[in-house]
Image (cartoon, rainbow, N blue to C red):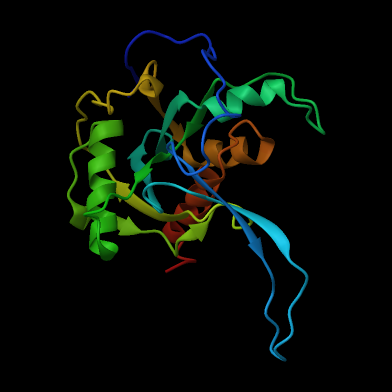
Length: 228
């Protein structure tokens, strides 16, 4: 299956950069600028130092490895969409130069946990909703399985944890993914890759999304019987 929504996007244009006037506690991401000190077991303290912490409006997220048994064996569904932060790397001084800027990133389906998504049952319910919205497959929360423990993305600055899950959709017919109506959904597409090709592409750097590699490796271990 391969599907594309809306017109193809060729670039992202900055209309306004209001970084200098925006408050750090407004917007999609909340930046807390803190002065901290370490408290030692003997009651003494370290010198005061600065810490920046980034929070999302909904702290954690779920990611779903959608897979099927196909002609090339186990195949994973990947979604390719606009990723502004990856695109704007082209404006930075990079320690290791990159040959091309990535406007889109190919990755597994994922979404933020909403306020009503409580406990592990809520995680599975949100995963099922994201599978329908972003991949077009109708699955139930009971068909979603956790894929190991949740993991921190960038614990030095970001509070977010991602809960990895998986669902098999062999034999299911997908609907057209609806998306969420955001401009970031324009030109989004989905495709299938064999599990081995995904692992090879992650190792080579062709696929650069960390949760995708971790999800693919955990699924490979589970299917091989080497993980719970």
